[in-house]
Length: 191
Image 1 (tube, rainbow, N blue to C red):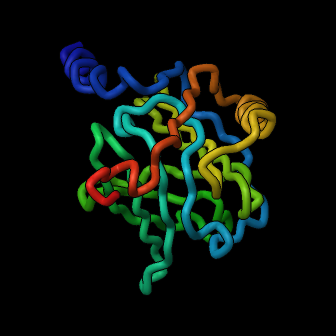
Image 2: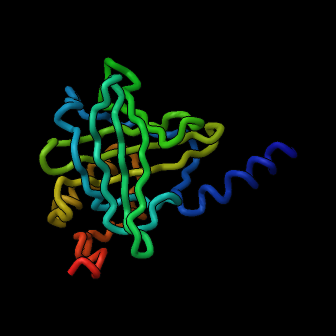
């Protein structure tokens, strides 16, 4: 019983901004015949499930190949008027299923799932991640990404339907603010 309370005390602060659900993670279908090379490059976050680690605006991620066959992942956001960046490493976790990536932003933390559910490579990508906690409940992460800073509402609605069709609850999904992201807006002294 002490272990249960210790785990609860440790996990509860982590899940406040997350979206917890009872039971294990769903197993959604991922992008068939995924082409990692076409996926590389700059993606802007259009919407996401709430997370503890993303609180700013103008969130984007850039994926590039490294020489060792891993992926350099650089994510950035503007928080309180400052650009914050974090660099991580991505890997293909299963060569038979390359749409199931793993990403870690720390050498001491394991790779977290980063599954590409759907992408056309040139406009949008739907990404899902899930972490099981003792198979009693799970924490969902879901993102709608775009090659541009905005998408038509009909595209966003269609993306949310794709998540729902894969048993992923996106009712709490929030839009990411992508306005005022240019360098001049960030640094008025440049004008």
